Figure (cartoon, rainbow, N blue to C red):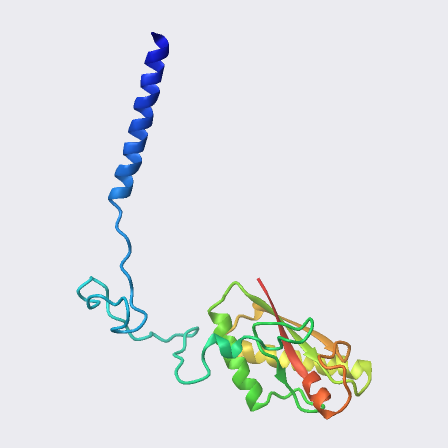
Amino acid sequence: MPFRFDRRLTGLVLGLAVLSLLGDCGGKKRPPNLATTPGGEGSGAAPEAEGRVPEQPLDEGPDVRAVEGEGTSGADIAGGASGMEGESSPLADIHFELDSAALTDEGRATLEKHALWLQGRREMKVTVEGHCDERGTVEYNLALGEQRARAARDYLVSLGVAADRLGVVSYGKERPLDPGTGEAAWARNRRAHFAVAR
């Protein structure tokens, strides 16, 4: 007789557990399907009818800036030097003129995109690497590479990226992106590269 009692009790406990689980699932609502475009597929009723708040304008602040127009998607930033062995980064390289650490207009525009990307990913840290072409002494190129990396880092800081998230290193002419000789190869090697880490 005790064997039947234990068996019934076990069945009763299991039945109650199943009912409890089913009761918990029945009261939950699924989140509404949100439209990807106004009036597009899956939009359903108007936002006000479902209790959703209509989109509000962006409140700009020191780390927030409205982005409009072309050239602002993440795809524009991605693949900075992808395709080159050992040189992939979600942030594109910037390039410099011969014997110069001055940022070009194109370099500033690229760094502005990088700043927006970094402000949306505050866990990311970046080492800015300064690189030079093969001409000149090792010492000269190490110093110039550091000036290039610092120029890029300082501009990112001026755009609101925290300085403690940005490191600087110079490789001079020791790590060329293009091992060739000639102006095309040299121009590709005069750069700042952005190594991203968490």
